[in-house]
Length: 213
Image (cartoon, rainbow, N blue to C red; front, side, top):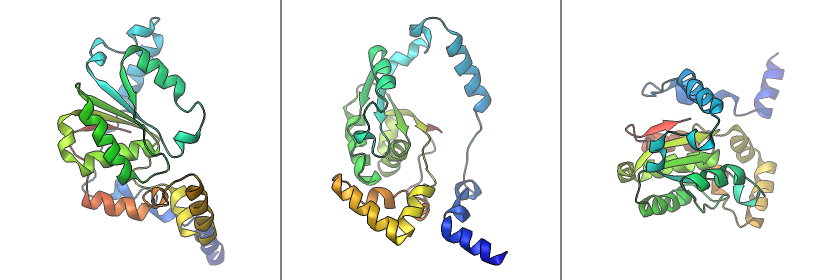
C-alpha cells in the first residue's frame, strides 16, 4: 500500500497541488453555470447569426489570445476568429505562444492601449493565463477592460507543465524542443503550481474586472 502510493506520487507529482486555489481563504468565485447555459441556449435557438449576440456587443473590442503553441497549429481558432471578426471589432493578439506569460503580458498591454472601445479579452488555455497576468501586472488596464473570458485556462497551474518541469529527463527534452521553436523555457516554468501560487500571491488579479472561466 505505502509503496504503491509512493510510486503514484512519483508518476503524478502534481496530484497534491490540484485544487489549491479554491482552498485559499481570500479566494472568491461565483458559479454561473446555470445562467451561462440559459444564455447559451437562447443564442443556440436563434435563427439569425446577427442576433446571436446582443446589440451592445458591438460596443466592445475583442482581443483574442491563443494558447500554448497556438502559433504553430494550422487552423487553430481560425473559424471562431473569422466569425467574430466578420461581425465585430476583433483582433488576434500576436503573442509569442511559446513565450513566457510575463513577456506576453507586455504585448497584451500594448494592444489594449491601442483600442478606442472597452476591451473584452478572450484567451484559450495559456492565452487566458497571459491575459489575467497582464491585468495583474498592469492594474491601470482595468480602466479599459470590460472583462476576460478564459477557456480551459490553468490559472492555478498546469499538471502537464508541473510534471514536465519536475521530471529531469522530460525537462531536458522539452527545453530543447522549445528552443528549436525559438521558445522560452520559462513559458513552461510559469505554468507550474509553485510559480502560479507565488505569482498570484504577489500580483492578485483585479477584483473589479469580471473574469469568466
